Length: 392
Image (cartoon, rainbow, N blue to C red):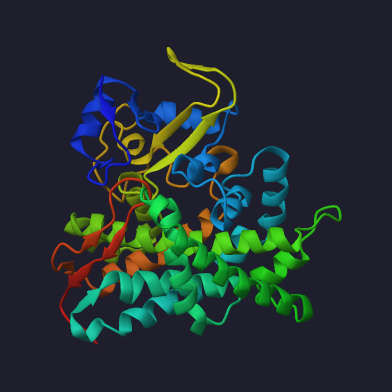
C-alpha cells in the first residue's frame, strides 16, 4: 500500500502521486498517522466529535516536551478542547463579528492601493516583502488597534512564530521562543494601556468582553492575542502568495478577476480549494473509531489533506480551477468546532487584495521561480518576484 513521509521536505501534498493514491483509496498510511484524501471522509472526520484537534501533540511529536513554546502551544485555541475551548472561543467571538470586520473593508482597500502605488511605476515587485507581508501585518495592527508603524516588528515576530508549523520545528525552538518572549511583552503593554484607556479596537473589546460575568484572565488574553497576531499575519501572507501563484498560472482568470472585482470572494474560496497554505489539518481519536473499514485506535492520528480533498473528482466532477464556479466547501479553514475563528478577516482582506492586484497588474507574470516553503505542513512563498507593465 502507498506510504507518505509527510516530514520529507521534498514531499508535495499537491502532487500526482497524491492524486493517484486518492484514486486507489480514501486514505494512506504516513509517518504521522493516516492521511485522509477524499472530500467526503475529510468533511466527516473534521466534524466527528470522536476526534479532537490533534495539534496539541505537535511539539511532543517533534521531541519538544517542555519550555515556553511547548507551554504556550498547549494553551492556544488550536490545542484546547471541550469546555475550556468552548469558553475561550465564546469570549473571543465578539471581536470577530462579521459586521465589525466588514466595516474595515474600506481601510483594507486603501491599504492595498497604497502598497501597490509604491511599486506600480517600476513594473516589478517582490510580492511577499513589498505587498503580502506588509498588507497582512498592517491589517493585524489595524484589527488589534496597534500603531501601524509597529508592523515591521510585529511581522518579524509573527514570521518567527510561523516556524511553529514547520516540518523542521524541532530545530526552530530558540527562534520561536525569542519571538514569543518579545510578542508577549509587547501585548502585555497594549493590554495594560487598553485597561487604562479603552478604545474602539479588538483588544479593548476582548478586555471588556464577558459572558455572565466570565472574562478572559490576563494570561488567557495574552496567549490569545499572541496567537492571533501570528496566525492572522502568517497565514494571510502565505495565502496571498499562493493565490497569486495560482491565478498567474491561469492568465484568463487573472484578467477576469481584474475586470470583475465582484468575483473576489469566490476567487478566495477557489484558490484555497486548490492551493491552501494549511496543507493538512490534524485530528486525534478520543476512542477507537471505525471509519469505512479502517480502525483508528484511541490516540491514533489522522491528517486530512486539504488540497486532495478540495480537488477530489468524486465531490466535484470538474475540479479544474475556475473562479466563476460554486464548489463544495473547502477545508482551508478547517471545520467543526475548531473552524478558524478569524476566517472572515482572512476572507475579507484577500477578497479586497486579489482583484486590486489583478486590476493594477493585468499582464503580471512570474519573474523567475521565487523561493517557496516545502509543500507540506504550512506552505507559502518566501519570495515571489513578479513583472508587469509599469503604470502610474
